[in-house]
Length: 117
Image 1 (cartoon, rainbow, N blue to C red):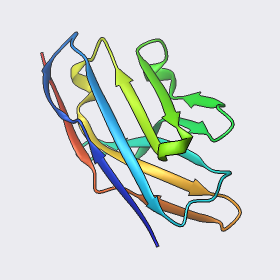
Image 2 (image 1 turned 180 degrees about the vertical axis):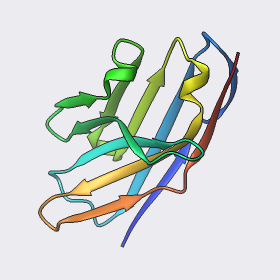
Image 3 (image 1 turned 45 degrees about the vertical axis):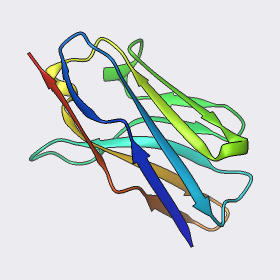
Image 4 (image 1 turned 30 degrees about the vertical axis):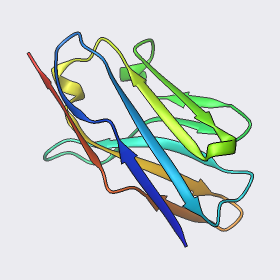
């Protein structure tokens, strides 16, 4: 069993910053990818950023240069530093753990990020 607990969302003005954190616990393989997805009202869930256990990162074009993803493998924790936030970044952000060897994805409970204009 795997659990993901995310935190760090909130309300911020446009141009501001927030940092999201997510801790994974349970049966965690050493080779995996952790990331953040988001879902705005009426829209599909989309990838924001992901990082593999080897440190390879991937970002959505809309957040490149503004968001930074990082992780601490020893703590099974992933972070998302968000800067220069825009109202269109408003969404529920979900932490994700992908364990390819098992073909499984796990999700956190979601944390709301609201950016006011």
